[in-house]
Image (cartoon, rainbow, N blue to C red; front, side, top):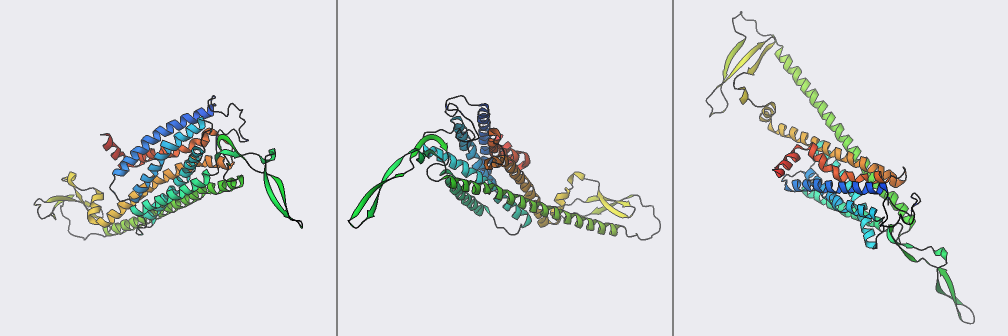
Length: 414
């Protein structure tokens, strides 16, 4: 767990290198500087996200989850990252056992909570896009889910922090013995015999390390395997859900294209009908027609020109072109319910894509750290702590991919 732990077999530290106050090595200095930058950028960025989304009055569940994610990112950047930098500087050697356990609790509390929020966000996007009529999640239920996930993450953090302590058990093989009394009965009476048995004595090491005094090494090994699954399982669920979303969107787009092609074929068939054979006339290429406006209060008439084409006619307005409505607004007037549904679907897809990028950054940021924690790859101190970049990049992703968020920031700046 500790990148600078002098008690592990992977790091060959001298006695002086393991004490605070002595010069840090280059990797530790780089990590501390990197964490300081992460902390400053993360506090500013997530603070802006929290301010913007607390001002929103919409009823979208995605806003609730983004706000919850920003709050936990802000907690990580303002407390956990500086805490980690201090622990690295002190070589994880602190005076009080409570501070050791608190650090491990915060560290192991935030990581699974971020993974769980990624899963819930993916489920929310899946329901909005693939099953828009279920309405399983609303703002109240979204807040309840975040609260339950927070409680569960607290439980995981507690189960992790009890494995670490500034105290260790002394080796009982060194000759530490305690006296215990054993009773033996005989015919003449009771014989009392004193037997010396070894015992474990707590030793203060001043370094936050494992396995501590509450649980043993067997518990720690078992719990590390269970804890590592809280990254792998959410990873599989998130990838599966976004794959299903992609499949649903592409299938819906394919069906829309087929429907549009069928409509075009029907229109072309209608236009290709041969016109009636009448006597040739000197009709000019363009004929002026007048059409009354549907608005009763409007007295002006719109002049349309009908251009004769080879297979029929197509009306084309040539006057007052600046007053004509865009195609999307024309569709909205023709079928407002269908237009609103299409616009909601497009908005949900854009939000899903943005949150998918957030999930991808989470996977990439934590994957090397996860492999190092399992011992699958060689430990690198700088790469190990790069997973904190995830808590910094979310506001940047929102700024680049969410026009509404950019407009809200501009309002704040002005």
